Structure formats: C-alpha cells, structure tokens
Amino acid sequence: MKFNVSSKALYSAASAVSKVINSKNAMTVLNNFLFTIEDNRLTICASDLENTLSASIEVSNVEGDGSFCVDARRVVDLLKELPDMGITFSIDDDTLAIEILYPGGTFNFVGMNGNEYPRNREENPDALRAEFDIPVEMVLKGIDNTSFAVGNDDLRPQMMGILWDIKNDGITFVSTDTRKLVKYTNTMTAPGCECSFILPMKPANILKNIVAKEETAHFLIEPKSATVTVGHYTFNCRFIKGNFPDYNRVIPTNNPYVLTIDRLALLNAVKRVGVFVDPSHGLVKFKITPEQVIMKAQDNNFCTSAREAMACDFTGTEMVIGFSAPYLIEIISTLSTDQILVKLSDPSRPGVFLPQEDAKDSELLMLLMPMTVQEF
Image 1: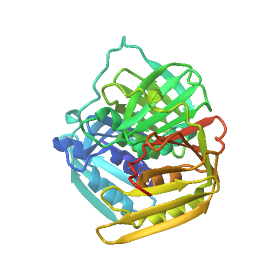
Image 2: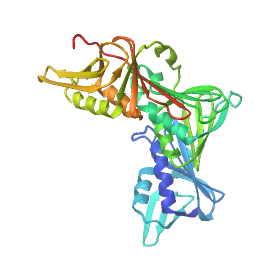
Image 3: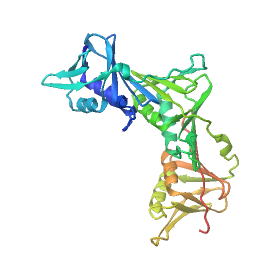
Image 4: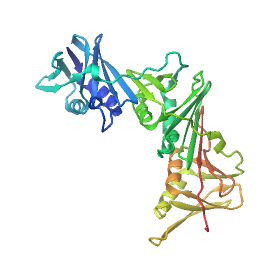
C-alpha cells in the first residue's frame, strides 16, 4: 500500500481525532490510529470504546487499498514538526512496516493489523431513531453555557453530563451538580423531533472542538448513542445511562424580590472578597437593601476578613443571604449582559440568576443554592 498526503491536512485531522484517545488504555491497540485507504481517501479513526471519532481527507498517488494501525502519539508529534509539504506513506502489506518519506528525510514505524482495531457496537436497526440538522452555533452555546455546572460525583452518574432535551421547536440544555443548575433553551432552528439524552463531558468537549469551524451539524440519535457528522468528521458517542432529574421541579416559580445589579462590578467585587473566604466552604454573606449590596467574608483560621458595598436596585426591603464565592463567580462569568437579575424569595430558597435581556432565540436561567448565614 502506498499514498501521498499533505502533512498539514494530515496533522489537522490527526490532532483533532487524537483527542478521543485516553492517556492510559487497557487495550494497546487503542493507543493507535486506524488508517483506512479506500477510493483515494484516507480515513483516520480513534476510539476509547465509548467514543469513536474519524476524519476523512483526500490522498493521491494511491497504490492499493486496506487498513493498518499506527502509534497515534508518535504520528501527531512527527506531523507537528514537519513543514507543510506532501509526504508519502509506504506500507508493507505482509510485515506492516511503515515508511514515511518526505524531501530530506525518512521515518520508519511498525504498524498493527487493522482488523485488530475495535469497531463500533451495532445498535438495534429497528429501534426508534431521530435525525436532524442544526447550526453548530446552537451546539457551542449549549455546551458553553452549561458545562461549568456538570457534576463530578460518581454516585450520581446521571449528573456527570449535559442533558439535551430535544423538542420539535428547539433544544433545552441542562446541567446540575445539586448546588447549581443551568437551563439554556435555544430555538434558533427547529429539530422537528422529540428525544432526550445525557451527553458526558468528554464527548461534549470533543464535539466543541470539531464543530468550531463548520456551520451545520447532522445528528443521528439512537437509543444508546449519537452519530454526529460535521465537515469531514464523523463522531459516535455513547450516552450516560439513566434518567436525568426533573429540572423543572427544582426551579422556583415564585420569587417576588428582584435584585438588578451591574454584572462586571459584582463579578470583580466577589472576586476580591472571595480572596478572604474560608476555603472549606467559600461563604460570602450578602446584605441586600433597596439601594445597595454589602458583601462580607472572613476566615477565622487566619484572622482575615473583607467587606465591600456597591449600588443596586432591589424590590424588597432587606435580606441577608449567603452564597459560595467560587460558584457565584462561575455563574456571573457565564452571563454576558451588562446588568443581571437575581430573583429571590427568602434566604433558604435558591437564587435564580438571569441576564437582563435574553439573546435572540434563546433563554438562559441559572440557579444557585444558598448557604446558611448565622449572622451578618
């Protein structure tokens, strides 16, 4: 087998596909790429048994078809250092000796038989499927707005991913770790079908990487996995088993008091005050009045404390409530409007954080559980 390929095109595809490979694998073959030559195209595939990503690129001067495995890390590291030029792969079909030639150099590898590489598990062809095309902007915004709130507790595996609740007119992305919750709805494009699944964080990050430079992504949803086709990439990822919590029941419907405040000013103030919190709980106390918010934090272990005040607009009379500084910083950083709204009912109920005005075709809501405040 023999073929010629652009080093730059091969590096771009190989580096993206390599993101699927785990740092440690139980099966040695999973440290490799599967290269397949067919009809003057090279398909590069990588898998961790749960996720499989492949990229297809054009090749020239092809002699023979077939497949072989080659060490992924070594190939990516080599291609990274090569200049942009045509390189030639020459593979001995009997010994699987691989020779890479380019003007001025030769590199030799020993490959593995392509038949040893694990293939995707087939699903029931009669099972119900959903299929739709959506703009990649919907995918990116959905993941960006929810990824910070994904849980990491192995005892709650259903919370270790992002829920995609797909309706005929749009998609709702939800994540929660029991302390904070994000619900982001986007109706930019109507999928025209109804289904839901929980996408783990690893495939979510891979998906962000491969769709970034494209415009539209094609989704084929099966009972246990999704296959996403975008550009010259094809990505198959397994879902998290189980049912996601009923997020609508958690969101309070009656929060009569509304705090309107400058987002950047609040973010910077919480960051400053957060330097002085007790690391064991991160508590920042808030005393909210109609004209101002007073923030306090202290760490009795080191006899440190902080206090800041800033202007606001509050529809209630006075309230004292506590929030975790790290969680609050994550929420305020994800919101993007100049002013944000915080809807409250009492110090024991969750605070609902909203942009002052939602972007077109979208609706973003963030919820943060309060912390107990003994005294201000």
